[in-house]
Amino acid sequence: MVSEMDRASERLIVEALLAARPDDGIVGEEGAARAGTSGLRWVIDPLDGTTNYLYGLPGWNVSIAAEDADGVVAGVVADAVRAEVFTATRGGGAFLDGRSITCSTADDLGTALIGTGFGYAVERRRAQGRVVGGLLPLVRDIRRAGAAALDLCSVACGRLDGYYEKGLSWWDLAAGGLVATEAGATLSSLDGQPVRAGAVVAAGPRLITPLRDALSALGAYDVP
Image 1 (cartoon, rainbow, N blue to C red):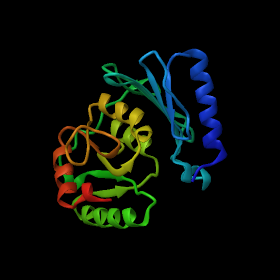
Image 2: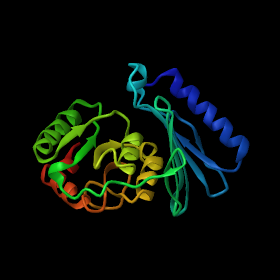
Image 3: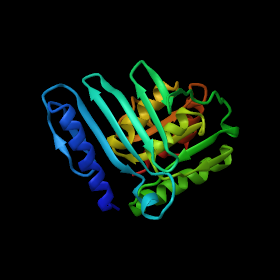
Image 4: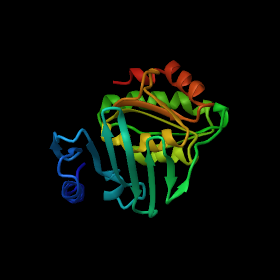
């Protein structure tokens, strides 16, 4: 689902960015696309968690990242309902409303709180349901908040011990992924390769291996 507010938010962000940095590139979920000449590109999810927004639920946010040739260099995720702002810069740490944050130190999968999300295609949802059904007895509990950027930020500040999902786009991951990494979390693809659009698992360094191993055994990466 896409609301007029998704489009209006993207227009507002793009206008502000181009006014300040007219040579930068831009890519946005709602269609903004500009190559740029500066070597810096902005990756925009103007309203992550649109379903939550349309149903009057918390958990929607604005996610903006800046990336250069070496990857994401800065990211911000603004949770409008909680009035919280997560920020990170590459090598500069992660922050919640200006206060430094760190990820969970949990190492026991059986007492870990794990977040996830589901796609919209029927076959993907069916397969994801099988995976989460297998994971549920192995962990403390599962949470599904409905917005990937905030799930990653929840890992960053220890509200979740881990998070995984298949079927994400780069604008879902870019800013929240940097916040989580700068908070000490480890991110990778579900197959253990470097993180990329499509599939991600995130957790503290002591939990990432058991979580990834459990998801691999359950076939999480094989979800269509």
